[in-house]
Image 1 (cartoon, rainbow, N blue to C red):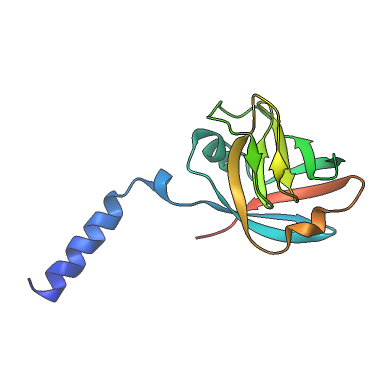
Image 2 (cartoon, rainbow, N blue to C red):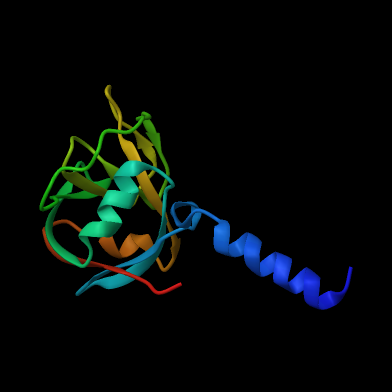
Amino acid sequence: MHPSKIAAAVTLVFSLVNPAMAQDRIQISSDWGYVTAELANNAAARSLFQLLPITIAMRDHLRQEKTGNLPSPLPEVSRQQDFAVGTLGLWGPDHFVIYYRKGNVPQPGIAILGNVTAGDVSVFDRAGSITVRIEALQP
């Protein structure tokens, strides 16, 4: 096959790919620093992305996470009990969580919204409240 036909076929395939399959990336910033995260491929994460940019007042909880309320509830998705350092989760329909330590939670578990991929999530490992700004990053 001629190289120009291969290039045209590749372009066509990429244009047909469902945009929901692309990993949306976000930045979470505060006075303490910032991190970059990739969102999960689920309805809750896609709904979170549609809310951006948003500012959330967060408080420390159990010295393992920062938690805060989103402006509106997100769709229900499957949940799990374990989480890793840098997991972004949803506890309840509108309760956003940034985990800075690994661990687990009781039933019904958390919906995974994404994971920190760059930056040091330990910037949130401080007692007290913080305000974060969550924004979409350009591809």
